[in-house]
Length: 588
Ligand code: ARG
Image (cartoon, rainbow, N blue to C red; front, top):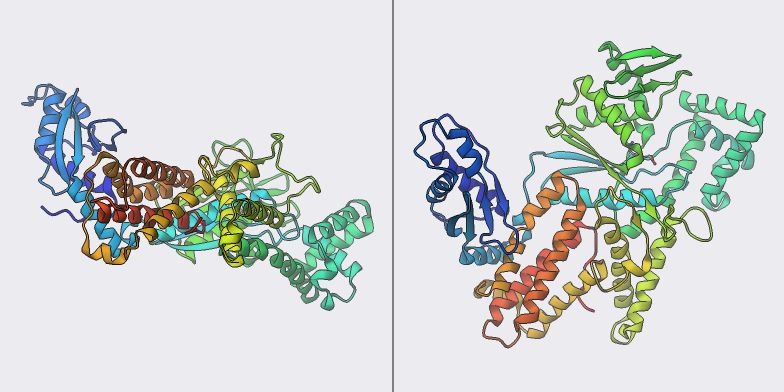
């Protein structure tokens, strides 16, 4: 039978084995297909590991089989005829090894080249998701933790979008709460004419915050005024509202500079957005009997936690948890999101676990955590400096994110000039490449490790052109592009007229890796692990190197086929860069 490749190779192989198992298994026995990609150096490309388990289910029940190898033989024999399969054989105690047809592999890659990489997008069981990321706090510092959240969240959003999920990219900024009383009162004091306050007049909002905090801590009159200001702000007093809006606006302009540099899109729906809904949502939880009185506050007791979740403070005010419960309610009911993903440092894990649990208790979410509607907290570790402590810069105790990105760009520009690129390229090309490499390096260094581990911020390491770095990968891609250019062939013409062959082991290994792109993205999405994609990308460039170091491309008799293989590699690499939020470069 002709087997159309729908993008996910592992799923295609699973379908074949599922059919074979249906024929092999006696009536009334049900088994899940156990299919895995074979490790390099093993006889097959994929293996089915069902024989042993199936044997223990059916032995002693009058089966005609004599042990697991015989069950394996039957699985292999019952495999439906398919264009995909070259051979299927049984090894050891019943491992069924499937070797894919190189012809079919080549044809599937040719088809992608013509129809585009989007035909290899995975399909996920959700239509709409919320990714809640970045989410700095107004007037406070936007620190490296927020940078991590921005980078990781953007990648997850990109991967989901590629998988045809509609993503609501939400910036849950901290724009509400008691600190605004003090900020507003301080603003009134310093600038009695609030209307005309400009960004430049306030200057650095962070030091403005610090000054007002000092006053709040030391001046009881001011403290009292600030507390009253909170009440007036929350009561909707227009003068207070205006001052609040002013402060938010100034902060927003600062944040926007970082997003612009990183080319990250986000829609702000801050904590204040949910404020009008909180009372009703807490009312609903109360009517379900979830809320209890405790030491003047109102709380939800949750099994498995030694402290309750506070949802109304003893002064009657709402807090981070009540806002998050309300935002969750809104996202599920008003926005109809089926998957809600929160990206913050692991330090907030308990907060998320607790309000997720409260939402399950309220019946908003299913009991089991991988069923939809689904919520996930995507936690990440700290960014460390070379001294192993929290990352800081020399000049101040906070890291200005914009400076950090500028420095990455400047350093990569210097490296390009050292290689003489300022003489070969226009100033614009030099600048664009420096930016792509510099920002790409910062992003990739963050994404390549498992997000839960802490990582050390080190410019020299991330900007090195050797090892698993963005620089190395971007250059590898540019080199492939330059081979294609140097051939003088029109690659779009070749796609239509020429055939791809995967006759040599290195060509085949590269082709197989290309075909595993979709299943990799799917895994990275379902486990919310961008490092899985980074790992794939690095492997891809290694396989390409093994191919290219042995096989001549330009001028060989396989030139056309090999150019197509180069192009397919470049296409997949570019899609990986895109998903990681990195701008590819075409020349080095
Ligand atoms: N503003 C918070 C912080 O800076 C992060 C908010 C994360 N999102 C959420 N829905 N709680 O720590």
